[in-house]
Length: 420
Ligand SMILES: [Zn+2]
Image (cartoon, rainbow, N blue to C red; front, top):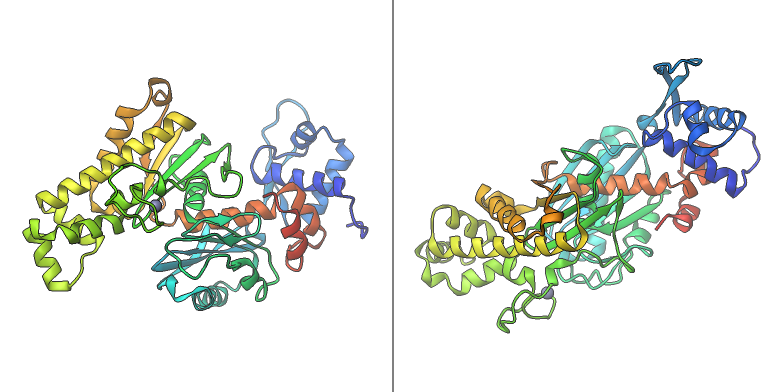
């Protein structure tokens, strides 16, 4: 270590070198020289510095291409940890991950987010504290996903329909008072898409469209490894695309005819409750419990109840058509369907898939892979961990903390320089 503060340009180069090794694009010193066009001396010096602070290490000899054999460099994913949280309307998940986004421990809790931000974040932080004790770690950064629109630059929720009382709330500020670590916040479905792109199977690096069908409906797009957030972070909010001009289809956003008012779990329950008299199964369930859930409707559909089955198929076709419209527009390599709707049964996914493929243009369908989410409902929290890691290791950020070997204590400048 030099002991002097590196210039922004030097810091950027340092960040670039670490990222080339971290992402596997260049894993020997000669490959780094080639990739960055930097001289051997600078590369050797910077790599040594990263080794000294514990971020890189020398591994085995690389297969020689004729010249002098060189050592393979390895990014030490165990050098630090990030904490990841997913806040849904009725549940939350917290996890600890190593620096490649592998979850090492996680906890889940049922919780009603409409209780309000402070009480909810106390519960999430309680999960983080338990995980910290269990894993004997402290967070280098926090990544949090929420079920609502997020202004990504400021980390604030904007008018979330299913989290009343959270509008304008800064989750980042709340956590910043408790942790000396940077905090990044994003919409939950964006993070599910990011999690599937990095850790889902099969993994092929092509653009990925994630369609989430649960109580609400949303989408996330990862293009060339980056979440497409649009200008203010609102991209992907497909739940409120208008799909019918029937004025009686009221959405919780205040509009009429929205996709999730027809196909989301809550919309389905609302309609089936109104029409329960037409179905012996649903009316019995309603009389017994006083209310229906999306799961009740799914079970009725599986049991062959004509009304429930017809509504589930109608919803699934509408999701397939919407996914096809999106595919025709953005031409992704993979479409992933995820969310609780898949628990209704294989026929739901088959309907999504068939409708999607029937409506997709020939060229867009040529190389298209369609699959279900593959991370056992952990794709969101995995994506939240990856968000924190990517921000921490953005070339413009690494230089701010590399000299110390850890970003702890550098949260403020990291937020400022973050690659938003
Ligand atoms: Zn709506």
